[in-house]
Length: 328
Image 1 (tube, rainbow, N blue to C red):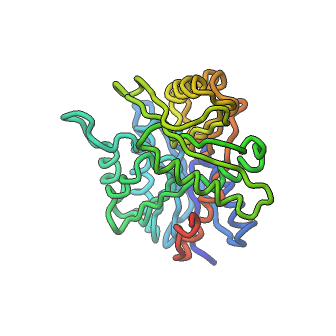
Image 2 (tube, one colour):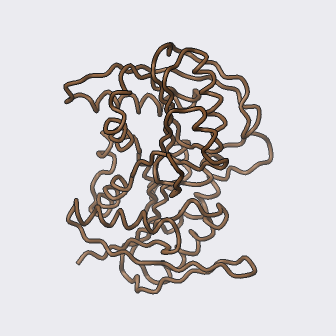
Image 3 (cartoon, rainbow, N blue to C red):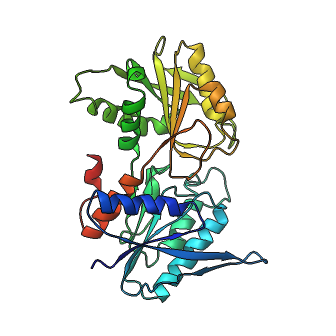
């Protein structure tokens, strides 16, 4: 019997995510994986405790964490869970972090500030086997982790494109894929290439193109002037981003795009944080898509299930197979 365990807090939103991974592995891969719970306690003085009832000795443990938690609690819980598992003589510990928090703090934007993404890497990586995450805000964050603790950055695009082709096929014709800023251009062009490749065996071929929004951000959370580079007149639009936070940048982009003749407007952000809710986004877009990495539900938001990709990654990691082949 395989000594592999999925671990999650049953009282968190990560539990349903773990159940879907387990179901996929059993039904699609014919691979049984045990799912166990960890009990996380928050004491009255603010301290946190953790308890794993089942024996983890000599087992390969994949801990799935809930990114909707308070970011500071999320960080401390990772440290406590790792210590608990190592003290219990687990054979190996892998963190499955669908949304890697602190990823936007990946550089110094002014003097005397921390690089929090690096601090996180240094604090959690010791004695881990690997980390599995999705659509990193900045791929260079992988360089913060030691070479013996690989950070596997999965891409949600295969499932997002499958969703678009299933539910919005007619609206894809003559579609322009928009990068919300220059930094996201590489990610957006990858999405465009995958979108083109997905129709290779289809009798109906759509025309796709690329455009870019250039923006100035005066300070975090505020967007200044925004200019369009490319032709979108009379075309449907989809904006691709890794994170939807307040939605302010997207709504500002929608305003610029409409002024330049866009017809229907769509957006997809892998990690839907929605700190200001979603009502304003629906005033700006015809539909809004996100994935279930951030474990939230809002009315009318189209949610792409990415658990099959995480299940495949866990299976391949355990079997010593290539994870990158999933995205070739």
